[in-house]
Length: 497
Ligand SMILES: NC(=O)c1ccc[n+]([C@@H]2O[C@H](COP(=O)([O-])OP(=O)(O)OC[C@H]3O[C@@H](n4cnc5c(N)ncnc54)[C@H](O)[C@@H]3O)[C@@H](O)[C@H]2O)c1
Ligand SMILES: O=CCCC(=O)O
Image 1: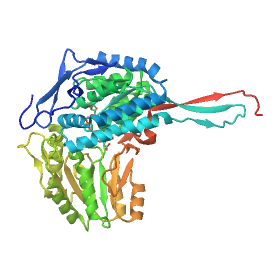
Image 2: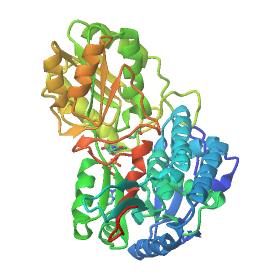
Image 3: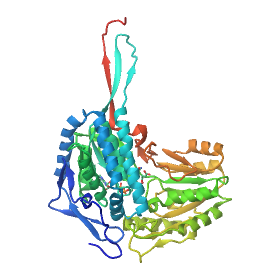
Image 4: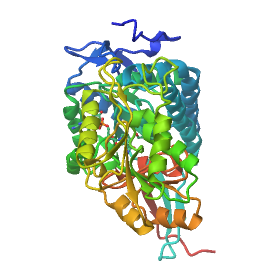
């Protein structure tokens, strides 16, 4: 199960590596069939987990439904305590949890440690928000009536997550849901389920009541699991992070029960550099945005628009920076960047690279496959003067290709940036506040980041517009998505004295 080049991690607490689903506080390690989890760096099998039948999702939904009857009435201070315990436990086990991510996802340890801090911060944040769910009082037209509103937990939530942040995409949803008083059924990605299961193990230790947080497992039956979660009348909300295509399927499937939905979908983030930007800063931040997780984040800049007067210098400086990368096994802490998740991810980068070059893009750094390291290792590609009809202008690459397009005017670049069906994140670099503000207002995206390539934080509202989805995670707004407003009207009161 391990090789010398890709050694298995050594854990301080090996119990964190679970080998089963987690339903009603019990671990289900056996099933008629199993699926394999592989290390993307080596292709070696690192775990065999139960390929659960759909009946187990039904059971998990029933368990969460019953648990909701009592969990919804738990004092918010108790929920805050359990969430705070989760935060503390994640930080206590940060090295082990990060190793699990690097092992199953392939990202570098520095990124994995960053992810665990980020993932844990949602528990800390929502521990603080749990006691702060406020309603309102309203003056109705009828003077004999009084109206108050309550924010109540929506009910059982189905949580479906991708592989690129195997811990943080779960905690961003689960922490808010649990804080509001909802119970959850989590379906992690089958490439990276070990991080989710480690959270189940910590939830037990944190004292989160049985049946409140459940994790189901499947590789081949994922669409059936999704269908069951969407169609079950006992599930009141689906919260999904992943591609726009799958988001649309889940939305259609949820129509029969009119479920509340949060969809955090694909992006195609533009990053705009004006000629009055601080170039050192713009390069440093563009590198941080583009190559975080080797380009596999939904907010990585995918299209870089650089003013034509500085495009060549910018491209050369970007090239100098990527040459400093150390690409290799994620678990080796000396490496700054790991590998891509699988061969499909590699093929997509190759396809976008070939397409842009065939259409006339200039090669600045050729990059490409690194077969000596392993099948999914890929060195950064930098292309400049990319034509605006290249595929990458329309589609998310989700990998280490950095295409740089030239522009001349503010109006032109805003039009180019907005010419996309996606609208998750955008970036603007300029030292002129008028430019920054005008462009930030005009960009069609849920998040605009000015003069920095990294903005993710539990305190900010995270989410998109257009086909990047809807709903906001994190921040003061994130918990609202797991609640419904109830209006209580008290009528026929005697006249006021
Ligand atoms: N907006 C955000 O916050 C955000 C965050 C991370 C990733 N993403 C997006 O996710 C995509 C990359 O992730 P991916 O390739 O794994 O996306 P994906 O949509 O293929 O898969 C996401 C998850 O959905 C599951 N899934 C697939 N088909 C399903 C179905 N019919 N029913 C239920 N579940 C199903 C997958 O197994 C996976 O766990 C990119 O487009 C990226 O931009 C968005
Ligand atoms: O990949 C999407 C999530 C990235 C983030 O939360 O910063």
